[in-house]
Structure formats: C-alpha cells, structure tokens
Amino acid sequence: MQETQHQDNFDLLNRDEVLSVESAKLLQYLDLPPILRVTEFVKAIAQRLLSHEEAHLFSQGLSCEVLKFGERSWHKGRIRVSIELCPDVPKSPLEDIRQTIL
Image (tube, rainbow, N blue to C red; front, side):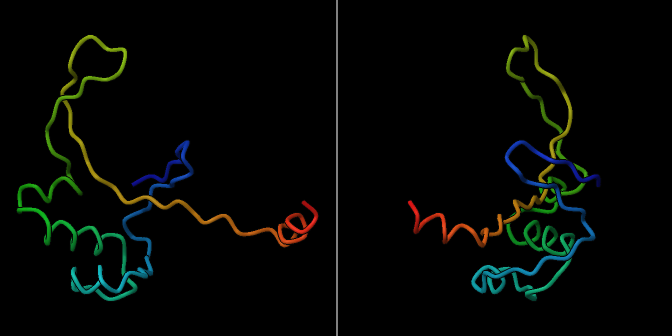
C-alpha cells in the first residue's frame, strides 16, 4: 500500500505499520492488545463488524458503481476502506508567550 498525503492532513498508513491504541474500551470490544500492526487492527474490525464477504471491504475491496461530481455517467470499480493518521500538531514553545501578550 502506498502512502499518500491528503488535503485534510491525513496520511494513509501502511498495513505493516504499528499502532498504539489508547481506547481501552475499543481494545476490549475488539479483543486486541494496545500495540498492534495496522493489518491486525483492520482484521479485528472486519471480523467483529462484518460478515466474511463484507470483510473484503478492507482488503480486496467490494464491487460498486460511483457517480462522481461533474460526471454524467456511473463508473464501475471497487471501493476499499483504509486506516489513515492525522498527526497532532505539536504546540510551539512560543505559544504560551503569544497568549500572554495578546
């Protein structure tokens, strides 16, 4: 899977990258350890929430048709769900000084 940068600052995660999930409730629901690969996280979501056929939505994709904005006809293809990360923007050390000045 190739990483791409999106306009909303989300980066597509590679399936072999490692996550540290902070939601204990979600981890308990999915029966997962707090540190795991993206592949394991996706597989657990698919197994818990979807049937075997629908689980392909996270890997091979599912057949569909889409009508894109500005297009006149439907396009056949496949859709796939992926996991993306929007990095937290670190707070600048000068931010506190700016706040006291303003």
